Length: 388
Image (cartoon, rainbow, N blue to C red; front, side, top):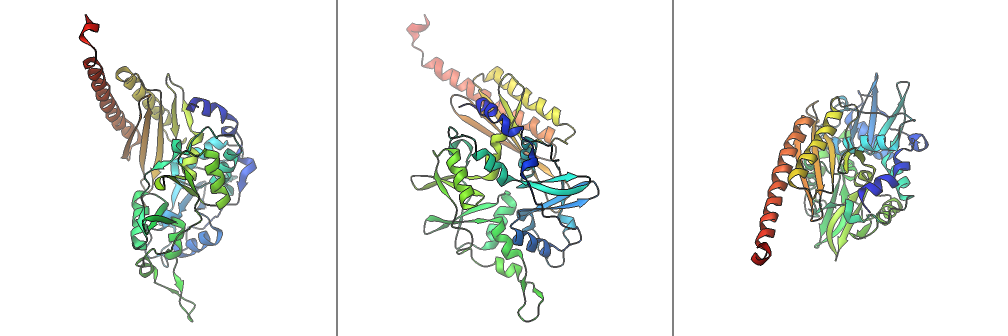
């Protein structure tokens, strides 16, 4: 089934109000130490925490906390970054867009300048799993060829991969096979200072623990499905195992991984255009949001002039926060679908408008050349007697 059909079928889910799935939110004060925040997140198994500061809400997640070094003495305030909020009357589509854009697993619900709760990504997945989506294959949404790490590698190496690549899941290889999956939440346990025996004081042993080998750290309760499995099978397995990812294999080879964030892409927002265009993660409070949509539409309209085989295109926008800078930058991935194959292009930058400009030039240049080459090849294959 096409993306257009998927979009129409999930209309009721996208337009559903979040009021029915608002759960508790972990709130913090900006003056609290990083180590205390880590303890709260581990105690409540919470990937995100939120801080209300006047009319604005700031947040930080588990992976971002892994960049901290002096967790005992450092306050959390320098690491926090602003995030959009929602109200009870907002839709699941809006909540999903904010989560996708900020790489969050929960979005805060604010009323009367108070955080009254949060909408968790797992609850949205539960609602999606109630729909019959078995015509969507796992191969349609998986992240291919995930980064892996050996069990003999150091925990510090896993931390570096997660923080630099902006990922939360690392399949661990032992004896030539995937033995477990290490997540940012697992690493958070090693970031928390231990209590010194007999003194009741926290010891500065964090870096020493990250110098240990990965070994058995991680979880073995990660579901494993075939790449051809229906998406409902994947969601059911993840919810049953209470994990945030599922490994995808074919002939015992790891082909990809699906996380809750990949599943949110099903609730993509469609842009009005001659060709079906979808965009995920565009922040609504962005001043030039409409300009970004128009640029995306223009990219594809210009592309069709030289590459008319385009059937649809999708743009995924993510914000990457730098703890050492208050300035964020954007990672944009555009996928162009045609009858022959799918093409993927990515770009990184501070200015979202310029990122789309760069992507537009790259896409049109690349696919226009491909179209010319295919046309020349088809001409050479024509028999001369068919020409005259």
